[in-house]
Image 1 (cartoon, rainbow, N blue to C red):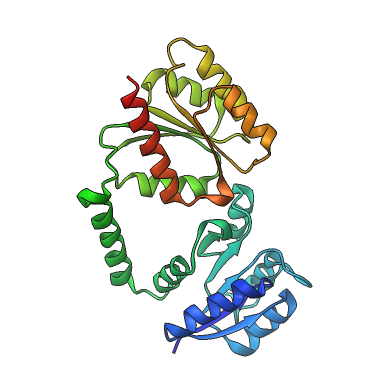
Image 2: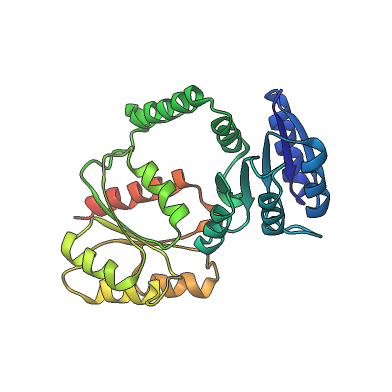
Length: 274
C-alpha cells in the first residue's frame, strides 16, 4: 500500500483529501503544521507528499529545503497545493525538486487523485482520462468547436498558460501566447485573432493599457477582449467594461473549462452580431 503524507493547515481541505485518497486504497497521514509535517516525513516515510506552502511553524519552502539536504528523504516526490499560482513561486518550488503544482482555487479532489496516480506511474489511467475528456469534448451535444479560430492569450503565469494551452489544444483552435504588452500588441496586429484573453497584472504595460490600445486602433478595435485577472474589485470590473472588455473573469473563481466556455460564448455572440 502506497503511503501519502498531506501537510496542510486547512483542516477541511485536508480532511477531504484524506478521505478521497483513503477510499482509493492509499495509507494517508495528515499533518496540520509545518514542523510536525517535517518530523512526520522522517517517521512515516511516505511514498509521496502533498504540501501546502503557507503553514504555521515551518513553511513549505523550508520543508523542501530541509528535505533536499537530507538523503533519507530527498528522493520522496512532492506535489505542491498552494493558494498562489504566481510564476515566481512555482519556479522556486520547481527548483526545489517539486514534481507538480496545484492552485487551490483551480482544482477539485479528483484532479489531485489524477496527479497522485501519475506520480505512481499509472499512466494507463491518465491516458484513459485524457481520452475520455477528448470524447466528452467531441460529442455533438457537448461540442466545444473552436476549429480554426485564432485565440490570443496574454498571461505571464506559465502554470495557468500551460493548463489553458492543453485544454485549447482539444478544441482545434489556433493559439497564440504572449507574456507582456508590446509583444502582445505586435502579435495581435500581425495575426488579427478572433478573441483576446487578457490578464491585467503584467510586467511593464498592464492589461488595462493593452486593452485601451487594442480598442483605440481602428484595425483591432472590433476584436472582443475578455479580461481574466486576480483583481476582482468593482472598480476594476467597471474600468475594464468602460475600456471595452466584453467579459471580466476572476481567476480564483473560474475553472479552465469555464474559461473555454466563455470564449465559445463570446465568439458565438460576436458571429451572431455580424
